[in-house]
Every structure is written in C-alpha cells, then in structure tokens.
Length: 147
Image 1: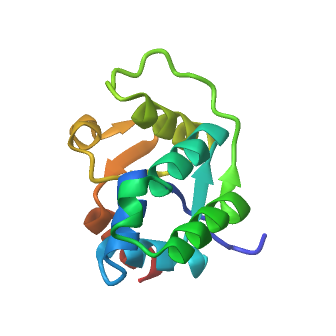
Image 2: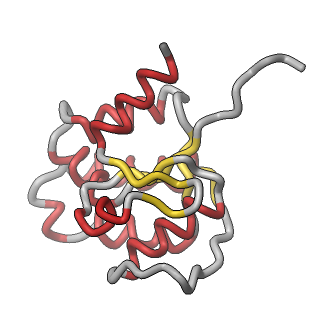
C-alpha cells in the first residue's frame, strides 16, 4: 500500500464557470486553477456537460467573456472531467432540473463537494456524502487538505 490519499472529487456549478470567465482573478477562477493543477478531479455527466455548453456558450456570456476562453473551458471540461453515468434521483427536491443533474452526477461520481453560488442548493447543504459549498468554503477545504 502506497499510503496515497484517494483523489478528492467535486463538481463545479455552471454559475461558477461563468464567474471564472467573468473574473479571472476571482475565487471561481482559483478553483479551476486547482483543478488544472490536479488538486481535485472534476466530475461530470453528459447532462451536466450539456448544461455547461448551453450556459457558458450563451450569447449573454459572450458579452462578458472572451470566446476563446469559453471554448477552451468547455473543451477542458469535456476532455478532463471524470465522466459518470448519473441515474435520476427521484427524491431530490431542488426546483431546477440543472441543479438536480449536478447533484446526481456528484453522487454517482463519488464527489465530496458540489461547489455553487446557488442559494437554493446551498440551503439544502448536501445529499448523501456530497456537501454543497460555496467557492470560499471549497477553497478552504482544498487548503486544509493540502496543509
């Protein structure tokens, strides 16, 4: 046994993906930097990737983010996320279907965190072993894990 820790897994909500594009020096962008550095594995399903493509690729996002940066982020998500089959969880009570797909992917992928700025999701605080956290909370968890 090598004593290596199991990789931390998380899923980042599309609202933070847009935030990272809009504010490259903000906390959402720092989370993506941690992902790129291998500090955690990003979990996704086909449904969450489609949601990211719809939201990040939306015309309104083009007004706040460079198209090359948007395209590069979407390519990274497709190529470097841990892709999982995420069955529907009928007991989820979140109103937004996109939020439910995020929880389903996180749960199916063994993620410890769903990172979001969505108030409804944050108020739920978690599902199973998945904690729903803000960008700041996730950054603190990454720092503590590295520490």
